[in-house]
Amino acid sequence: MARPKSFDPDTVLAKAMDVFWEQGFEAASISDLTSAMGINRFSLYDTFGDKHTLYLKALDWYFEKIVGPHVEKISAIDSLDALEAYFSMIIDYQHSCEHSKCCMIHMAATSLATKDDEARAKVVQSRDLVQKAYRDVLQKIKGKGELRDGVDLDDAAWMLKIAQTGLVAYSASPIPAEQAKAAFRMLIGQLGTEST
Image (cartoon, rainbow, N blue to C red; front, top):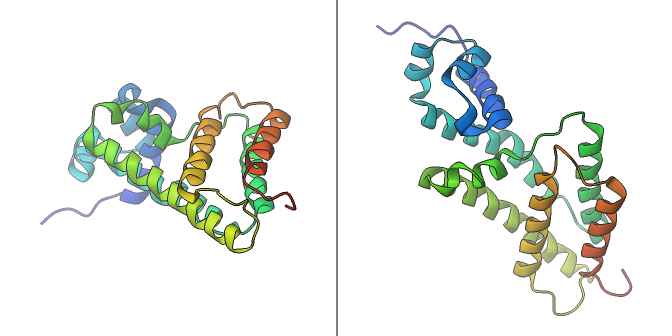
């Protein structure tokens, strides 16, 4: 009969996620992971499989715990002012933290996803979910008459997703807040009618 685990898999998976988030897949060693997780190599392999499998599980954890709540915040947006305020919130957060880390999905997109189909699929899943959330928000805003005529909702949603990705890519050395907010004010202003 298998012995019960002396640790909570979800708790140690969250710690592994932090290591991968900080160091990336390639740089994170098994020793780094076991040290942070507080388990030995046997327990890591027995519970999570190899390092690659652990990384994919950590991406899933990040998707659930970090991306999911952000998508909920996006989905609650119901006006162009609220959309601008959402980006201002991200900018303020970057400048309030001593060390604001880049998005783990973005890190995966620029490293492992270039050569790993499973990691790429998770990046695409996250990317497309956020784009769809922006599109749904823009549909709501259009229904309120705030969008100018001729705005393609899919194109505009991709524009917002790409702009967000660019913003979070500089989390560790954030763009000056005043300039970043002005850029998003201008970007979002292009979507609105003259009266908004």
